[in-house]
Amino acid sequence: MGPAARLALLLASLLAVGSGSPAVAAERGDTFSALTSVARALGPERQLLGLLRRYLLGEEARLRDLTRFYDKVLSLHEDSATPVANPLLAFTLIKRLQSDWRNVVHSLEASENIRALKDGYEKVEQDLPAFEDLEGAARALMRLQDVYMLNVKGLARGVFQRVTGSAVTDVYSPRRLFSLTADDCFQVGKVAYDTGDFYHAIPWLEEAVSLFRRSYGEWNTEDEASLEDALDHLAFAYFQVGNVSYALNLSQEFLLYSPNNKRVARNVLKYERLLSESPHQAVAEAVIQRPNVPHLQTRDTYEGLCQTLGSQPTHFQLSSLYCSYETNSSPYLLLQPARKEVIHLKPYVVLYHDFVNDLEAQKIRGLAEPWLQRSVVASGEKQLQVEYRISKSAWLKDTVDPMLVTLDHRIAALTGLDVHPPYAEYLQVVNYGIGGHYEPHFDHATSPSSPLYRMKSGNRVATFMIYLSSVEAGGATAFIYANFSVPVVKHCFGGTCIGVVKGMMTRFMLAVLFWWEINGWPTSGYMSTDRNSAGPAARARKTKLIAERSSWSPVAFQRSQKSKTRVGREKRGQPSGRGPCFTREHLRI
Image (cartoon, rainbow, N blue to C red; front, side, top):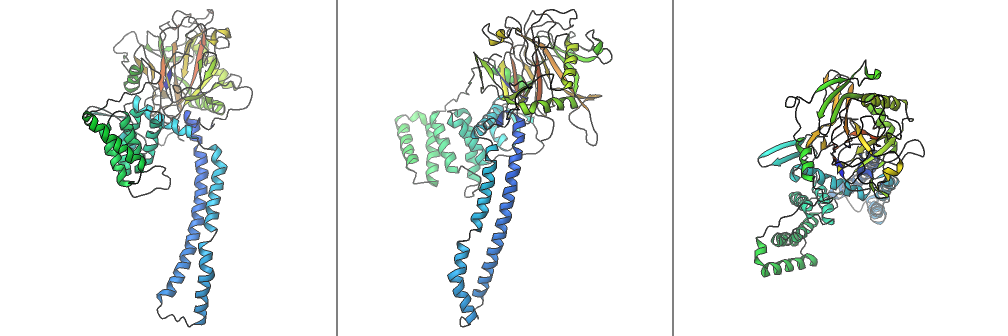
């Protein structure tokens, strides 16, 4: 695969099933890259909740006992008629002061309770996300913020809204509204701050300062940051982008809460000197450029397609686009033809509805999940993990389960392509994480020096992408140069479904998307999972974007092959690129 990226929720890991042991999907530092791994993190937290519950019960019992002792001693002091001359009272007074109070103050019960909590935490600590996961999750929120033009203040309130001028668009409406704390916003802003990304750091730190101001004087045990921390970071961020005046104001506010901080006091003197030397800086507004790390020329197009689904034509506008029942002259499809929808002609992109049912989709996800590893991209002779591809994937041979053999037969009948290696690759199942993505890229090799050519299987010529789950928002596959997108499609018998109807059991059917990667190649070539090959690279890129929960998609790639006697009816078109946008798995966690 050529360098690119895609924002989506799918499954990813380059590991062929059949030998060795399953990959440890929840490797520390990789939890954020697949929502299946994020979901598994719920297990350790449930264990921690159990530990904390036992600690609280122990502390409640300890405090009840302390309250009893307090009430007993207080009652003696409240009785002014209590004669110290009473030998029993005199004895207990001396005993309390010599022994009882020492035992209360030096009791080991509190330390034993907290020790049990710490020991339990240490046992599950190796299964918890690493700091790299926190960084990855924070960058995912920034990615969603960018691609969908989401408002940071709205995100902090749990609202996914795009505000353009006076227009407000709900991008996603979660079932439960969940807001972020001041400390949450600070951590997101600090991840950007630490990498010099002040474009993202400033709005998140601004929101953190605003929330900390409202709750100043309160303290949450779990918080790592404070109002002073947020002011300190925000002031320096504004200084770095040239707004010295506001950096001074924030630093002066910091000193109101922490007047003895010498470093910030020196910063105040520095800012005042700079403003006196250059008064225009007091009113100058710095223009902060959004970072474009991979330097994508197609970034604006890509994000526009994710937001609006592009300029996709309808069948009413173009008579050349049509729907039909397809048999491809295959006996396999005579009794149950495929429901074909031509989405685009150049490039030629087809959507086959109701291709797999929900049970088959669950089976594929279950087979792939133990083998998921962080997705990589080819860079010369190496396979690298990169920021522009955030997902996990697994490769499935058809020998793993008979159902995969049946799936291969179905794809072969539909496309007229040979589904067996070396003509096709094994099934690749991809799961994207929080804000997971694969930015615009080529599926096929773009250089004759690519290692793909040494495999003697040719280049990729076609892609067969099966949707393994529905989505609650977005989920489109974006074709950059053709300027259109195809949303995730999940059907049920008798019509389109948006979830499970209350009180009814619904059998779901999922669609598949098919397109040719390279122009001028025969229509007989199967793309089973991720192995399609052909010759010269065409100007085609694909993209994907997602945000919450896991949307799964097995991708089949077809390699170049000689024409066969039975050739599919699919038309050859220009290659193109794709990518899912902001997807969620329909299944509940």
